[in-house]
Amino acid sequence: MRRIKNFSLFIKEAQQIPLSDPSKDGEIFAGVLAAHKDAKEEPRGSNKGPEVTKYLQAVGLSGGLPWCMAFVYYIFDEVCKRLGKTNGTVKTGGCLNHWNQAPSDAKIPVDRVKSNPSLIRPGQIFIMTRPGKGLGHTGIVVSVNEGDRSFTSMEGNTNDQLSGEGDRVGINKRKIDGTNLVGFIDYFKNSRTPEFETDISKAITGEASKLSPLTGDDVYPDDETVGGELGKAPDDASSTLMQQALSNIVSGQNAKGSTPSDIKTNSDAKELLKELR
Image 1: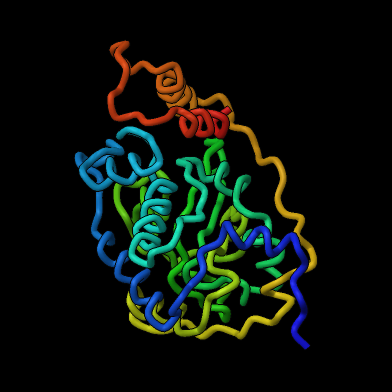
Image 2: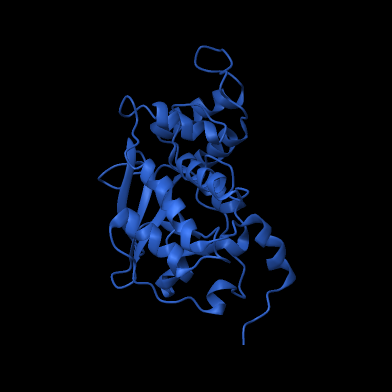
């Protein structure tokens, strides 16, 4: 018998993205992803460029800052516009800030994933830490291989070495174990279908993921307690420089002491600064 969801889950569903026609919505999601697969920094290593700046502006930040989370938010925002839905994702440029603010019932902590890899699904967002930097990294799951405990993702600010400080959008394969994963966020949790998942996987990787079906307990778990405080950054040179850059934004000044015209809000710069401290 299907379990009836409790009242708190009904409230939280308002923050998720309902799929009206999952047989077509997956094609829309995949189409937006494919349109950005060749985006890269210009010049290389600058965290700038027409596409990168557009991603950062989507979360109220200027060029020159880490952009993996901004890329994810931009993709979801474009998908929601084409679906005619409200974007329920957290609007932030900080990976760990996104994790902390995401709806609790949408979050899947890494411990649950390690014990049940079938919980990873195309269209989810993964969040991980980057040891030694105090920062995080993120991307969008496009395919899953439960057999070898891995998933394929589309990520911004990455490279062939799977870095979170790369110079382009890339398709990476990551292992569930040993990747500093924090967990996954599923904004389509209550309305996803196999058709939705297959469309995403086939469009980006060329083949459908072989996924185990989710049970009612997977979709509506009893345990809603997730994640806590994450690690602080060491006081290394790169972190110090980034802290200074973000502090300048928070104070409303650039390196020359003038106010950047394209900063809509400094709240995300504050959150990125918190991740570095």
